[in-house]
Image 1 (tube, rainbow, N blue to C red):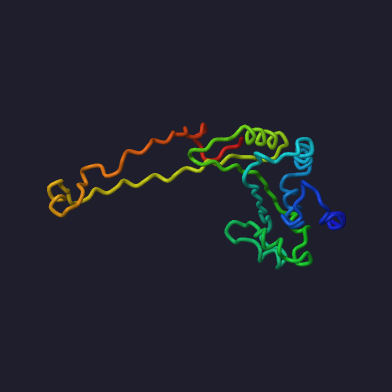
Image 2: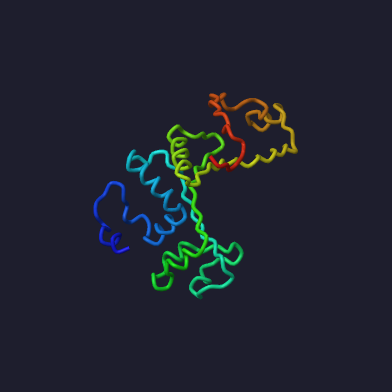
Length: 197
């Protein structure tokens, strides 16, 4: 920890000092595991690129015991038995030591999010393969559009004669010129919402 604090602020193209707290980065490292983290850093050093990395990095700490120190139990969600990581990272180091977290199950995974008309790019596929080769969980989450509700029919039928009587353009005639049809992008090649790549 003293080494990290001594180097903090040193200019480096691959480091954003304001991005995450030391506690959060420690949890990320524990969640990924030492070997996987070393493999990921090796890839970054060799390729010096982050284009195509998944959109999200998800981190979860499952609390194992039914009881624990008072400070820790205040940070555990009663239903999910997961630690509120943001609150834990914001707490002072004396109040929330890292040792308490190391005794818990820390899970981490990268998630690439794709919409209904979106597909994985070549660089995204390469990163998913790199992450999985490093034994880091990397998944794709396909977001599906909600089904549209049927449009209710109008109760009153209008005629050309009735519209002409009140000086309106007939609703049975097209009032807008036809629009150019957009190209349809095919749906994702995998029909499930989340899968391990």
